[in-house]
Image 1: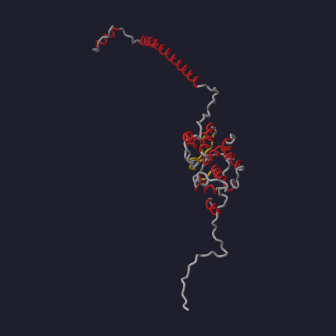
Image 2 (image 1 turned 120 degrees about the vertical axis):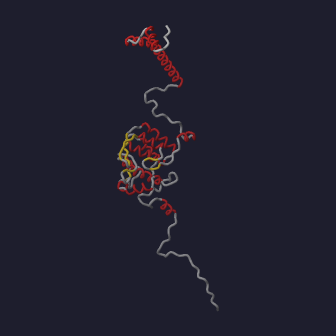
Length: 295
């Protein structure tokens, strides 16, 4: 019998029985999508994506890495929940992103990143913003809401803070300076960069009003002077009366001035000795070659 040699088939490499194949389940996708794997810096598994990405990615990677390396993050921010975060927020004494020549992250930035990591409920964030006892807690809640909130909610909860003029200490890489909470809120609503992080895009208010998501802006300073509400017709009548009184006062003062000016001028001329008679004036003008004055 003739033996026919068959070509060797190259089979796919197999894993040894002692080695397990690489996992390919949903757990792998979840761990790969998070930053750094399942560690203390990983975003909470129950949190949702914000602006189509991981909430922590709102803070740039370089700044995130610096926050993870700080002693305050490792000691004071480890294991914080939405309830225990309040105790750390009350201890804040300034706002800001980074400070010093090496751009170290502030405690304010560490707590902001912690809020992005655990993603507290909207009710807790609203309590942060609406509280009137701790101004730095209010500033922290306002910045977090600006980063993750919907545009309508941002305007609805942050615009009332324009009437809060509390002083805030700001720590930057250039040093310390003082600002006010209303200026900080205006920076969040009008600028694209605050506390050394790039803020998500915020539509203009009139776009939301046109879309029906927001009503007209209410003046928070209305009624502070104690005046009662006056109708439009009464305002028009009051304005016309004021204008009329101003016109009468202006006319009478002008007439008084016209009557008093000639007398004052003549008195000054007589007192100074400059009121010359017509003959002497004509004689002087004749010497100068000028025409005489008419009598």
